[in-house]
Image (tube, rainbow, N blue to C red; front, side, top):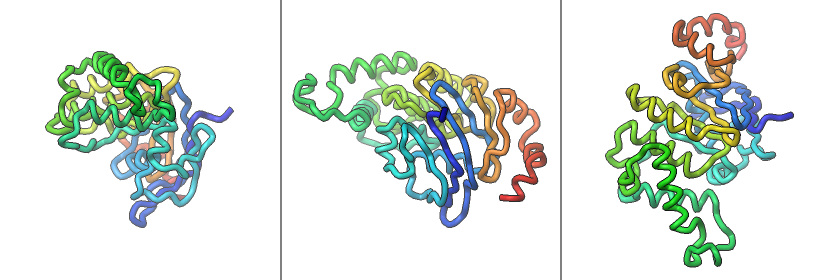
Length: 266
């Protein structure tokens, strides 16, 4: 039986340089996968490619989700299908409140074709009362102050607040496959723990998670079922959570040595 999310032989160029060189990965809902690798190995290239960033050119391969090759879909179509990306460097949008941003995103993610009787004054999308209830529920779950919803999106936010905002989006949009691109980047240990606790609140049988990280520390809080090591654009080694601990202890040089023959053939 095929996995819920399947990456087959993915090759990606960025500005004429090949970064991903035949990457293969399968993720099922209910699983947490972690991809680790040294700087420049292709981790963020993978995240951006999966979400459809135009800078990343797919030269070969397929990515299957719900019976569709998502590489043929636009980013908004991938989102509506149930794919989500938490950015390593979230954008700031002054003048747009968190609440307005989230309501716009939800109405784009779950458009309603017949809004005449949805209690929303004839407007399409989620009724305001339901949206406020959902936002309050998710912010309480993530232990966020209600005033957060009135602030402009990421404007003046600390690094930890920006990453918690990404987790709040994930909670509101209810994806089926979530990609977390170095969510721990730039955070102190307390912020990492708070963000990880938010992710853990959302994990379950209906959600598959891909955690992309350089360090093992976030995996102290988000326990992966599978750990994959990405080197030179390929997954060269996979294992359980203990593999991340070994990387923390030994670094990446031993991985390069053990997989040198494979890497030389790329």
